[in-house]
Length: 458
Image (cartoon, rainbow, N blue to C red; front, side, top):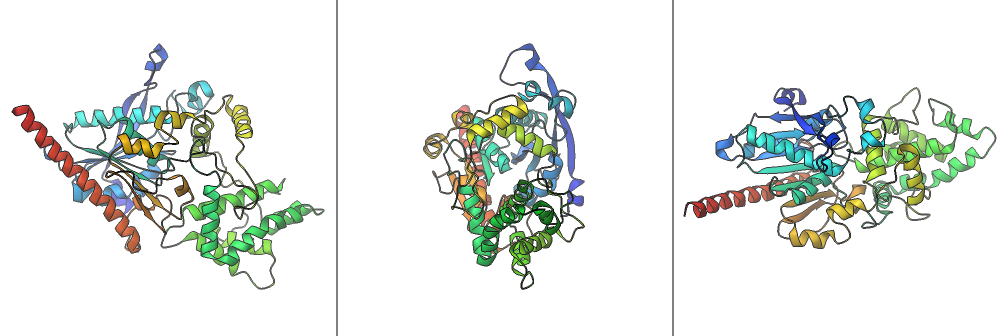
């Protein structure tokens, strides 16, 4: 089904959402309109107890998710599922205080922008939908990817009476408060490059020193600007280095079949004409991936988009992931995570200090696997091991119903993207495993319903 066909099945609604779920001050009772979208096309109806698949929006507008969250419409016919997509507060059209400008104004208005409020929002919307469509007995499965995957797992832990289970795709749920190695993310990016092409990896590794050497010459920055055809003259080498860092991590994280963007970059680097220097090769990699442009915007990855601005607040408040790398453990120049410097940057931007231990305090941290083993249930943690974030993911089964499904060649959130005829067999099998587990959860739920009815009528 094409996105345009599918979009005709989506109906948009707005729920009057409470601003603050955890306070009883008069201003906490303020409300805003939260967007959610429903696809009724395949739903078996409330009488059938057909499930509700709920996509939990993450750091961006819901518009982007409706086409990419293919797992829901691809499996709706099989389960006769009602599909629900809920937008995360402060993103898209779900913005409090009347406007984005007002909502993002300062720490006072941004203070209601966090994961605990977000999953409480989802609980409110979902209960409202269940009541509105007489679907109180319909089991709900929450689905999310990346940060949304963390929200899905946390939702199942905090609201087990509302969600029967969770599919948490590429959720780096262990990447907080030193529960995962700081260097892990960049180690996997490096490994991905090395496995794709040893010579490409070597060229990238050498390039940082070359950038430094060229920059140290008279007119060095203008030479670099010319080599990389930058849209604006470089003021410092960090602009170029940050751009390349973002490009490399992007292609490693989203190295999806059938295009495999990392191979495209390395193909450009390795395929450069004989005799071309290291930085010339790197530029050929940029051109291969981005296309032949009149110039290349070094700010492309840091433009103040809705996601970049919103996520900056989230990482400066609670979502503190200590991602960094040392001197010789990756193909990148040293950039260890420095909490003091990070805190100063956040204070300078928002006037507040991050709370790096709050996520692990509220949801569980260092002993998360033991905690999940003892009181968690019905969570699938899916990961692709070529995804740099998998280093903070749950990669081994924790119990009979808190399970890990990982693929050696998978990338970020690949399993919840739309199915395609070109999908490799390992991806097809990964999705089949997830569906089988969800079917088992629903079958058990239906048995429990019958048993409970018999007991109440006894």
